[in-house]
Length: 386
Image 1: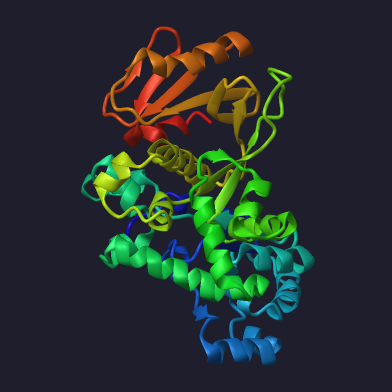
Image 2 (image 1 turned 30 degrees about the vertical axis):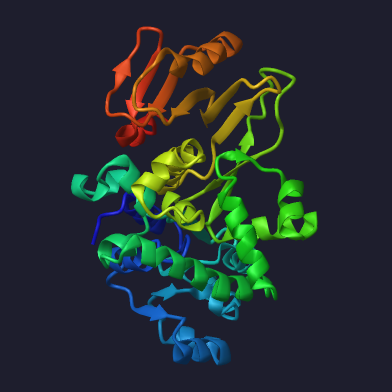
C-alpha cells in the first residue's frame, strides 16, 4: 500500500469524534486507507447485496452485530442506518467507533446533516498527490498528466487508456442513475466531455446549455452532480475587491488530469503536447494538486482566483488567515520575463511582495523581489506555510 498523506489527519479526527466519514470519488483509495488505519474494526461492504439487505430490513439487529464499532463501506447505500447510528453514538462516549466511507458526497451529507450533525467529522480523500508517489512512478510531466493519479492505475498496473474509459462508463451508468435518475445518458456523456473542454477556464453555464441542448437549470443540476461525485470543482473569484472591475464567474477544474485527457481523446504524449488546451490541462493539474494537499490536511477551502475585465489575472490565490499567496501557473519549461508580468502587476495592486510561480520545467529560483519560482515537482512545498 502507498502511504497516504491524509492518514495523519484521519487518525487525529478519529481521536476527537465518535465517527468519521471518508468521502471521495470512486477508486480513490478510501476503503484501503480505512482498513489499514482501523484494522482492528470489523469491515462491512454495503455494496454486498446480503449485507445491504440485512442493514435495510433490520438496521437495529445489523448494528447490534457491530456494537464495538465497524468500518461501514459505501454507507450511502443504506440510509436507514443513520438514525440508528445516532442513538448508538449518543449513548457511548467512545471516539472513532464508526468509520463511514462513500463515493456519493451528496447522499452522505444529506443523511448526516439530518441525523449525525455534530457527532461526525469529514475527510475528503482524493486520488494520489505526486508527493505520495515514488520518483519512478511520478515519471515526467506529460506522463503524469496523461496517466493521472487514480490508485488502480498504480496498484493494479492497469493501462490508463483502458482504465479511464471504463471508469467513465461505470460512473455514468451507475452513479449518475443512482443520484439523479438521468434518462438520457448519452446527453450527459456529451455534457461531461464539454466540461473537459472547458477545464481551467471561466464557467459559462449558458454556453454549455446551448451546446448540450438542455436548459440552464438542468446544466446547473448536472454540475452539482459532478461536484458531489468529486469529478469537478469550481474555483471562485476572491471576495476582496482589489479592483472593482473584476470577473465574477467561477472557473471550472477537474480533480484529475488523466480523466480530462481521456474525455478529450488524448492518449499519447505527442497529442498532449500539441493540444490547444495543453496550458489549461497543466493548470488543472497544478490547481488540483494543491487542492488535494489541502484536503489531506483537513482544510476544505481557501483557494480562489483573480481576474479583472481587462485581462489581468492571477491563476490561484491561497488564503490563510490574513495571508494571501498569489500563485501564477505557466506551462512553459523555460523561465522567461513573461512569467513575472502577472505577479508584478499583482504586487503593485495589492501592495504585497510574496508570490509563487509554478512552471513545467525542472529549475527553481528565489528572486530578491520576493517571487519564488518552483518546478511542478515541488508543488507540495507551497502548502506547509499555510
